[in-house]
Image (spheres, rainbow, N blue to C red):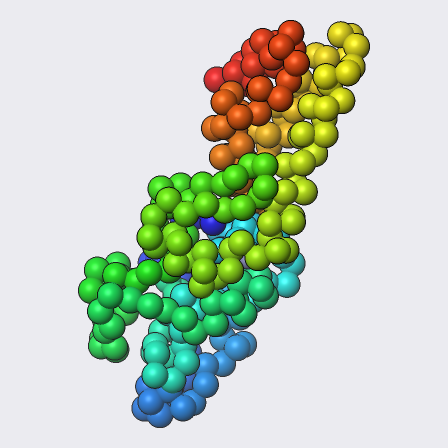
Length: 256
Ligand SMILES: [Zn+2]
């Protein structure tokens, strides 16, 4: 998960259109028995705005996915929050696995079904939801990574629950995260046996991979951010003694 910036006031037009307002009234009048229309909350303008904000990544696991699904942070199902079906602040792009895992799970400290309260900040204050929200919470305060195994680590109770609810340590996710950083460890193995002439090129390459991938637009950018923060303590010891100093010099130069 990575923090994203969404402007709640600038919702895609379709979500505030007469058609969606009328349909929302039907949903409310029927007590949630009338289902939300996919072609409204999955409208092309909604998708293109979410693309810009989330860079085609899943809001929960940061996997790049071309066929993402629209997640209702507060579930739109009957007996939950059907009146938030077309609420811009309630819509995230997520991958199929995260959507399936989270489903309509939404534990809160105190449930509030007042349909007049649709402002997410106000609702959050009353309800204190458990699942972390990439548009509101700061994931860096809640998550860390084991850069060697690819596991996501919880730093808070909410993070522990979010990992469980969204299955953020699924076999698949651990495999793909480990695969992503393993390419650096493979290069380190090579550099330790390489001749001095090519070292500089390889140091630059390692630095470039790490820095490019920690950019918010990249897949698993938070994992790479963690990799970067742990570089000196955890990654550098993998280099042979005489190579450490030069590697660190390149890395620090690029980061500064
Ligand atoms: Zn996902």
